[in-house]
Image 1 (cartoon, helix red, strand yellow):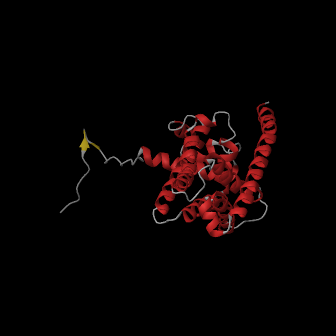
Image 2 (cartoon, helix red, strand yellow):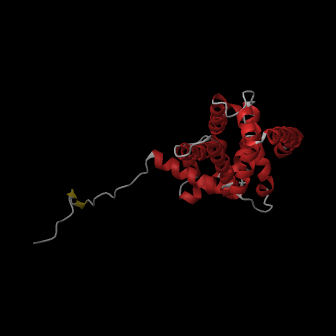
Image 3 (cartoon, one colour):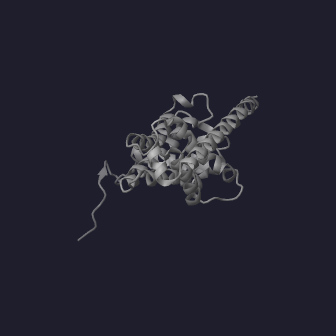
Length: 261
């Protein structure tokens, strides 16, 4: 039996066309964000260039701009994806944790763990997005509110059950927890030494829980005086953090204007 011949058109052999496999839009976008995250984390937002992100994927720069209008849009998408993964993990893990102290401890520990294990991404969020004039209009702002809302919900439930005092200032508690955690890790984020998320979580939740404890709970555990002292200390820390943030604003503005010159 002879070999099958290629079909011919007017005497010219026609070879079968090679199949061209195209990535789906979802896969292409996911690959671009993975590459962008690696470059942003390695070089920082300012020094990252779209051509390098494209080069890692073997595509031209223009392909990225088909999906993301600007480099900042790409950064926001990368951070959104990062938040979604964290929030999904939060909700899944919390299902198996009961008790106010345990649930608070988990959320504090998880936040510290994120900082410890992914400092480059955390620096991108705090350094590039939170400091922007348009931060409150971004989806990342809304996702950060969802991120901290889990903690507020736990505190609210404890207030309703009278485990915590009725006069608990919810926003202050949120700022104490997350501001305190970030203050605790500043040296680490500057590249100075290390810290233990477990130890830090134990210390922070201990102060917070005793400080918010209701009168009945405090009297039963003998921690009434300790709780009052803890609240006073935490309020002092919160005021210090606010002063530090205010003192940094002019310098940031100056840096931005110099960078644009």
